[in-house]
Image (cartoon, rainbow, N blue to C red; front, top):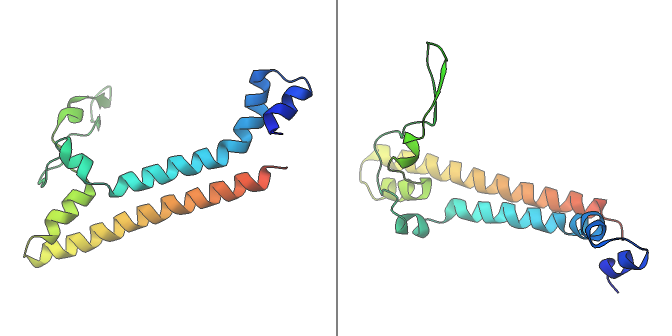
Length: 138
């Protein structure tokens, strides 16, 4: 027998069963999957190259929100969404392939940042899964 069948047996509706039984039981695994997918996306470079990310970028893209000294003090612009872009793994690859010492220092720093982000996301996934399983009573 399953949680769903037990919930139906005591008179719960489909919505109550999903909301009160199925989702709480699956939430830890859902959150873990989302966080691990984001963590994996941090390191994936091939899809970004396929959709047209620049392999080397020497400028900062336009930010979507710009603070100014005159009223209304905040300007929101979507122009930055259409600027050329790159991703940290692509940038690291290009820094490593350059012979100058400064680029290898940048690549090392980028690798540490990427590793830290990945480690943090995986740690969050483990903590969320642990807490959710601790809350679930069988």
